[in-house]
Image (cartoon, rainbow, N blue to C red; front, side, top):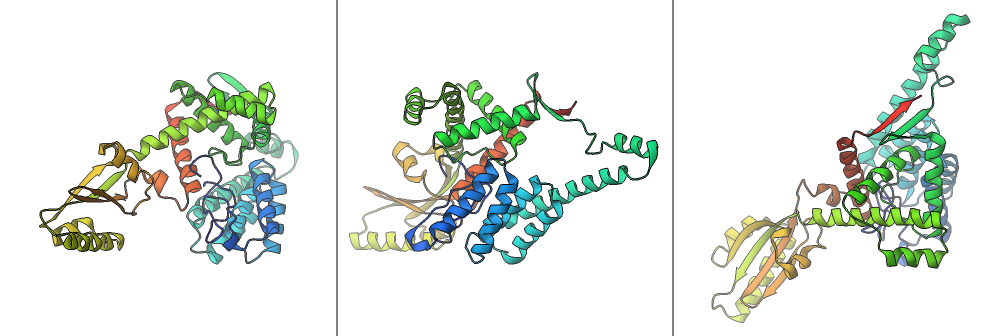
Length: 391
């Protein structure tokens, strides 16, 4: 999901923010015709920055202030969603559920609705754990204390320890690294980071998994780009190292998504002229393009014009260089016309499960966020050297 506004509705529906191609997230895209006040922009942006900086109390307070000042903002659903996520971090589970329920009630067409069920379920599960722990501690005397201890009451629960390839990190180390990382990114004016979710532990694991994958794949930061960042923003050696990790991961994600785009499926109408006059050619081209852009089935169109049109399906990777470049930027369902001396081609990317992670979300930023989330989950399943334990 994106965090807020797009050009038409001041909304970039999805979770979070990212780099490069633009969810799960999400800068304000301010346009003159959107009519968003500077105050509206700044206040929302500030709240979202607090969330990504692991400051949920500040985030919730700022986003509530935004909703109070701009109740009719087209980014109200986004503000509610990130408010709910902040409340989850604050363990205000009942309040979080109410916020997510409000999104469904007030904004049934919002792209955030697709995520609300999951967030509500998480809030309910955590609330149940909290209540169970509380009940375990009821009673008097040593028996109650023993019962509470056995159940793992919050007061006596052991701290979380993350083990990554044999190396242990406690919660303070994880939080410290992520704080340093965010500070370095902010200093280098890098604000769209695909793998950030606002949960320091999960973000630390994602960063570790992706950076390890980058090293295994021999994907690194460009020396020239890293040197330019360090000089322009006067980064310290530690900040430069963190920026280098970010650039390596960014390049890895870009390469992965480019490879994924090669797997997209295409429908193609092939039209070859066979001695028809120029007027008929123009009329045929116009008729086919109109039908294609109306969303008619390419197979049906080919049947209607079977004497001059043939249908085929293929992968983007099967196209030749210049032709491949002409469709790479197309979204699912969009149509491209490529002219040739002896005719023309009409090409349309179609829904493909192997590509849905990047093409299925409502907004470029959302697409990258969702893609990275799925990919990190896949990488974590393959790697058994990352464990979260209590010691």
